Length: 297
Image 1: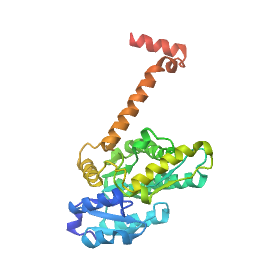
Image 2: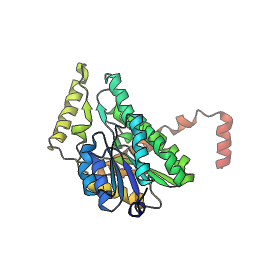
Image 3: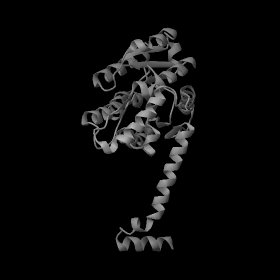
Image 4: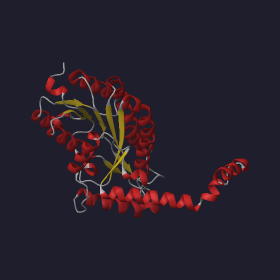
């Protein structure tokens, strides 16, 4: 049974609360007086939050790649709080390496975590949001969706797959009062590169300079000799502002580096589209092209 104190606050269901964005967002939401279902592969890592806010938290074990745990976590959330108002699909990982030799099992692991697991969580939560005729879904993507560097193709493709369903999802669920936002962060000072990042070693000599360069950069981030610009706490406040909005964006870039990268990618796409416009439109049947010219005139 939902108590009156809980029913007056939104209920957030956040994946990956043990660290990084998930942890920062959970802390900030709780400090604002709202309710959070804290999910983590090891619930002991969120026990301190649950102990600090016992009336407004539920700590649940959740490995997002295990469908039975996804269904059980959602079931517990509904049993305890009666609803889920905000779903944040934050849990993710990155397997880096050159396309030619990233092992198949690593590719599949990447997609299992970054795409199929999100799909599983969505399908578990959406029936409840449809029934209550309200909700907000935030799916974490990356600025890598707009321009993956060498070595990041598998990660960016998993995020592009996620972005590929988000637009359709937003249109499908809008009639039920459910909103969808894709979160596209740049570089933030989380422990992602220590906990969730794997660089596959190359066996091909031609790629060795590239892998060595990537490895050196990652070691610099892990050792904090290279400081990423983003503040996770400020990211949490930005996400809350979006959820508070009556007209939230479909896409939310986080960080000046994300904005700059996305703007650059859009300008590049536009410049190539313009440069090859005549070739692109030359593939229409002649009568179609003639009709367009006539309508334009």
